[in-house]
Length: 570
Image (cartoon, rainbow, N blue to C red):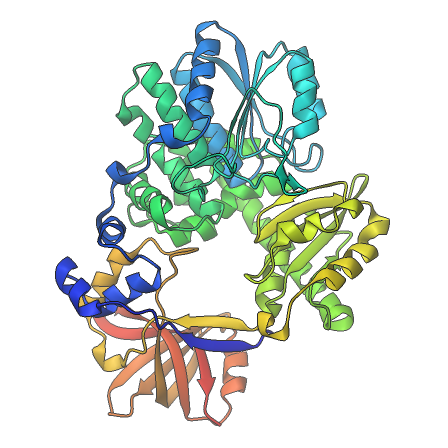
């Protein structure tokens, strides 16, 4: 397992002054500073930002041209085909564009690639089929930026191509290689000066739609009806919840509460979620995985059909199917993770970069299993599976390792690749797997220090300081997620009065704790209860990293802490 290091954030500011100016607790002011929200304007936006604070879509390079070209094609009655992707961002992007183009009166349909048959993004077969179907314009979303040869083919056939994407642009010898589309909208282009380029594909599509709606006289209200899908994709595609992403998710969650979308309602119902109280966490770990499950195990068209469905009986059926697929996916993931851990322990425990080959694992689960390995060992992890014509892989990284650049360095071994600093997808001939493992490890400029899991503590806060008011105030910091993590607090030397394992799966531990001044408070820890008790042994004191919470039970409310990390005194 990965080593752990607790580090206290020491960023400085006038916390009392900020607290006074914005009417918040100094602890809250300190957490906001720890998120690198510094100027008064940024703090104001962080605490009270609304839709009015989003950046103008006209700042997104190519967005005006894309909307203009779409308007021209719609008015001329040309046939448009949207080419999406099979993950949650691709499904939401396709939903946004398809809904918007329909409202503008377009002759439009969509194609979502099949993960196994087509692979990621637009390919030559999709282009040839579109040509044979009389499609005039191809509109990509959440893909296309790396499809240089494929788009060359579409252009050679005389088709119009508009690329909307958010992935990194491939560079060769330091120079950007862009596809020869009529318009490229991607905030990651060097020449694009969009103020916050870390948006997902669905947000890029949503911004283009804003301009398209302006051209067709469709008001802002119509555009805001699509906000919730931009929010779901932002969380589901694990974008940083900073800057305008945070506003999109915050405002989107409010809108989901009374969504008119039958599919989302039914999906929440099947998972016992209250849409009025939906959190970013529930989108990331319940709604998102259900929408992703169809693209993983069957076809992403199911997820899109659910979002487009307005018949309650059919929506109910589709939502149930997606939930069942996700349950199946969970079981398959657990089995694959077990096999991967076994391989690492037996063969690769000394490797800096983990490369695991699971030939019989469903290829769509490779990324999830890679993420589990990364969490467990705190090392960049690649999981490969057997696929048609070779092996397919997915990787998840750590902060110290730029995964996309790592693949660029071994691109001669790969048949296809793409990704971000923290995640990547690729394919290669099966016989290249060993060379791939060897060269990645030889190239890795990583030290033992990089494999230590850093736990960042916001404030060393005594339990005596916790109050219902303070916990209530922390709501202004939500939504929590990547880049706007739930704050963590720490307290040393708590005495353990009692401890017991809870739940039929024994997956929680209830602790009765007391501070050095004799102040009592309950704590709860989630995980393997028996492992926790073994680890604790006969220790009667511990240090904790925690988050304060209110325990509501049988109508009574009491303060408690959720223990995230702990170290026992020996």
